[in-house]
Image (cartoon, helix red, strand yellow):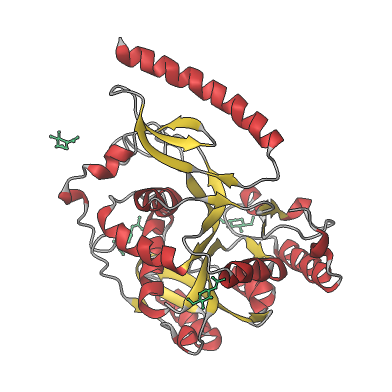
Length: 363
Ligand SMILES: *[C@@H]1O[C@H](CO)[C@@H](O)[C@H](O)[C@H]1NC(C)=O
Ligand SMILES: *[C@@H]1O[C@H](CO)[C@@H](O)[C@H](O)[C@H]1NC(C)=O
Ligand SMILES: *[C@@H]1O[C@H](CO)[C@@H](O)[C@H](O)[C@H]1NC(C)=O
Ligand SMILES: *[C@@H]1O[C@H](CO)[C@@H](O)[C@H](O)[C@H]1NC(C)=O
């Protein structure tokens, strides 16, 4: 009886919440979105809460890690950190004093996509006196021809790191924790670490001054991204993101960062790496790496204004967003075919920078 009441309240709350959020978005659309966490509970039948702008969001997540049995913390990679890094390990980091590190998650076979990024924003290795280091993060492949090609590419560009796990979609959490391992082991002098997917174009002329401002103010504890809020796991076995009850037993995920990009200050990266050893594995790397881990650490997730936009809506606008997503990938079969759009977007950004267009952005 109590449980039923609880579910009804939850449902009603959820509807009310959606309406409230819509209103709030309209009202405070150009203020920052923040998530506040509380450890409060309504009652024993209901679940721990996340407070979002004063409104409660139900989640049972807390129980997931507060009382986890030790056999769930035995993964040699995620929990015991038995990583090895192959190729160009930290050489570019050691040459510099302080810099911004950009980690680009790339699949082994995506040579063309990597090249597009090197030719566009990746060609900027210093902006406003800030050094920028780019590294493509790959897993392993059992294809020797492919591996030989990657090694050749790595010698030529010195911007590839490769972790000791098979590169696959279901192994992305390994890639995430490997990245944390790698920064902690080889690249600790970075002041900020940006994580992006290979369909993102970075607005360097906007992002670097934005981060430099935080550096000057000594701001730490930074985790910024597009926040995904109140999402439930997919329980339909044929779904690409199918998550079984044994993978994750609760009805909602804690808030997390959309996988395509996040900004982290180095202190956050270091703390996240430590926390991975006590958080049970989930193959959804965005939920794991930018939902579970910040939750455990009580790191506040912030979504800056003008954070990300699709390239197709942006070619003819002032480049006012920090990141642009080349969303055409969704229409094809998994490879980023839209090379032209990436170049076009970068041109828009460069032109906007020359004419100082972003000085008039309303963000
Ligand atoms: C923790 O889990 C154990 C075994 O699964 C259970 O017996 C115990 O009651 C749980 N403790 C709390 C505080 O939930
Ligand atoms: C993930 O990586 C591990 C370690 O290399 C490997 O054993 C496993 O087969 C990979 N899983 C998938 C789904 O690729
Ligand atoms: C930032 O930290 C440095 C060294 O810790 C200090 O010298 C400087 O005054 C600080 N700047 C601000 C704006 O707090
Ligand atoms: C993707 O599409 C291209 C062009 O239509 C085709 O040649 C290729 O075989 C497809 N790849 C997969 C994995 O389906």
